Length: 354
Image 1 (cartoon, rainbow, N blue to C red):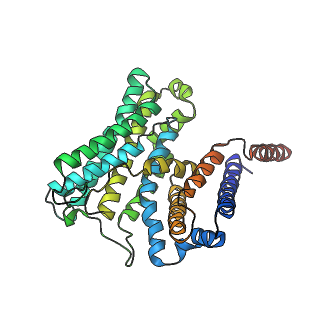
Image 2: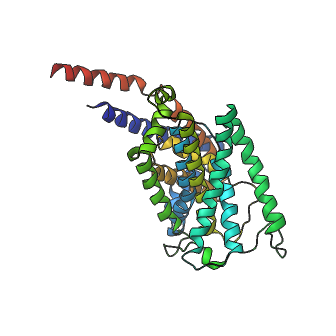
Image 3: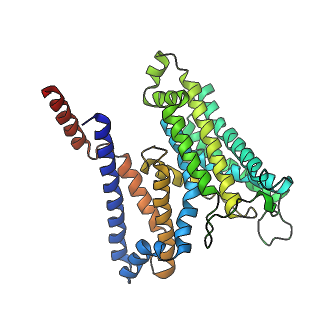
């Protein structure tokens, strides 16, 4: 068995163990705290599949997570730990809002321009911590986390003082033009064209990472930056490029979510898709092709927790326990490491005997 096949086998087994353990842990917690545990468990695990509308909710919830997870995947592949996908996503919403309100464009062109502006703002936001790291070696973890809050308040300021609907009873922007909205694609649900766009971006990101020179450089820099410099790759610029591209993807994701699901800006805080995208990227093992499946699974958990909270005495916050367990176990390199080593040794021994 080749090393690559061994890694795929072990990673797939590890992923299955992580999912099973997380679900068993949640079931145990429900049994301990609920007066109607079977109602809660049934609502959590089977409720999301009870109607077409709820199945649609899973796919709707997966769309923004695909974009933020793709952004996180690129950043992690480059060996960086910027958390800017949250800020890039939110400022992308602002860009789509401004274009949707301010410009009068044809139906086919309007959402394209809105998404391009959203991606541009997302890229600019991601470039700030990347350039600070390049110029002054400032930790991208600290700057990106702080910048997320700056972006959040800046976006809310822009909506509140420049695009707010004066007739709205709460913070809300003016309505965007109908020509800017993304159309629905599945009757009876709110699944919109953004799902197709997200899947296309997953395929394009995979092609970029594994089939293009720039993606190879990103992977090489992420695996061994010193070796990358030795062979002539300008590692710092590659790290910046990866974060800027990731910011553009997250920004477009914000635009897609807004244009597909809303007619006006209504957020008072950042929605948190960037943080959840980290769990999705880890669950997908930083593989862009696996990101949609991981995003659908996390969205399924979110929908199930909401149904459980409405139909039982267990709160929806339990989904955060699952996400935390998944992140901890995926990040545990020692899990199944012994089995991996035995398979490698067995394969090497077999090759020597040929």
